[in-house]
Image 1 (cartoon, rainbow, N blue to C red):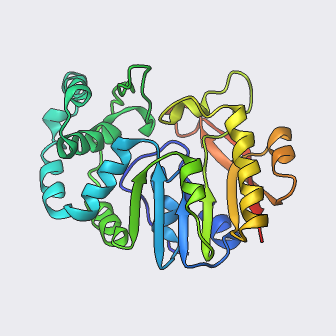
Image 2 (cartoon, helix red, strand yellow; image 1 turned 90 degrees about the vertical axis):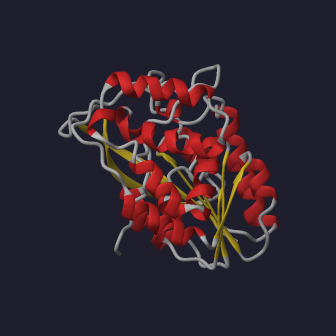
Length: 272
């Protein structure tokens, strides 16, 4: 399959798992994603409609602006991608501006700039709700013009909302298909993969609750749900009522492209 990339860099994106997700997702009228992230699945798998949610309001505001104001947004965003903007002083100045700016359009421009200039495409906030990822020090950050236009075109069939995953799941109706890509369960006590997410509150309790909701929704409401996570003893226990598929992927653990580890990920399908 031809794979389209998101205009955002995103830690934990599903680009490498697209073929497996495509193979396992049942057909339906509407794809629902309670953890839309970079939107990679939405950008690559065809449905008549999409209902895409995330608890990160900056992300959802950006998506709605790209959907509805793409031409002006691309023109304005390009002004932030210059050689003079690619240095630590400018980056931290704009990060500070992002913290205090309340205009949704300006924050969306700054969010894209920060995403493309920060370290490893992380999206992380401190306890005060401030974006706190350091400068990435890339030679020439890529401006994703074609990806932005493709996203906007695709987004005409999508609804983007800022809400919690359980709110999103409650709204699912017959004929929908749900794909959940929650913050992954850490592989060890020292792993920090959940810190890539908007908050660190998606703990073991929430992991287990999501699995329980998925099981109920598939059984009682006849709506299939596919969940991705690390392949661990706990996730296998939580997803024991699902059809399980283990997939090995490579993950970068530093900025060195050769410094990679192989990780087993689990795709759990709760089917009707």
